[in-house]
Structure formats: structure tokens, C-alpha cells
Image (cartoon, rainbow, N blue to C red; front, side):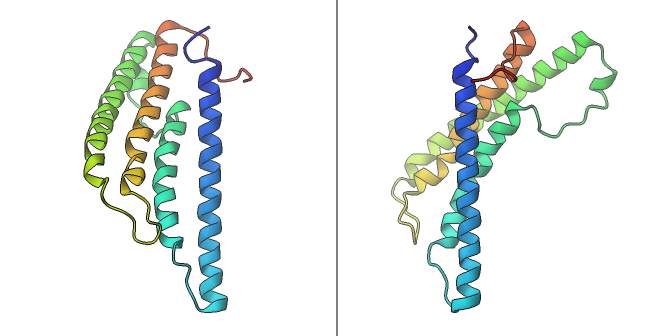
Length: 165
């Protein structure tokens, strides 16, 4: 059993469910706001804040999901001309650079959070540290998925992408 087998698939499914739920809440909130303004000439007090902060979390969790599928945009014009070993080397260096960037993002995001602990949102009364926690959480999950992809590529370990939970 590899470190990325059933537990990793469960984590991926959990993130997918959370992202779908958050997007549904955002859509319902925005539709409710439009309906309230159109038909009742009033506004929901929490709609703008709720949708904004849920979109931040959705974006950061979605980055991890796209990294899991190796779906981020890249230009492969040069790497397509390389041989298999050189392509493996370039892909590994690219993954390590991404992991390095995400580590810096995660560390500085965590360092920023205590400064935000005393700030709250205006209408929701939510501690801003919870909003900004999306950055280190999203970065950590993305590191996990990129490291897994790199591990599978380098070791030839079986990828469980097609296997059931």
C-alpha cells in the first residue's frame, strides 16, 4: 500500500464535495440577492460577504483539485521535443518549484493569521483568520497533491486515480 492510496482518494472526494457545496451556497446566495432586489426592493445583508469569502475558499480548494489532475495551464512546446528522461527531469524540477512556491505562500499566510485574529467581518461577525486560513489550507493540499504526482512519476508507483475508494 502506498501513502497515497485510499486515504488520498477519500480526501480528494471530500474536497470535491466541499467545493460543490460552497459553489451551490454562493449561487443560491447571489440568486436570492437578485430576487430580493428585483421583487422586494431590499437587499440581503449577508449576501456580499458570504459569497466573497466562500469564493476565496472555493478558489483555494479548487487549485488543489486541479493540481491533483495536473490540469494547470502550461506551455509544452519545449518539453514535447525532449526525450523521456529529460521530460521527467523537467517535470520534476517544475513540481519542486511549485512546491517551493507553495511552501513560502503557506508559511507567510500562517504568519499573517495572528494579526487577523482580532478582526471580524462586518455582517457575518466571522473572525478574519478563518477567511485567510484558505491560503495555507489550499497551499498545503496543493503541496500534497503535487508531491503525490511527483512521487508516482519518479517511483513508478501505481497511480490510484482509476481505482475505486
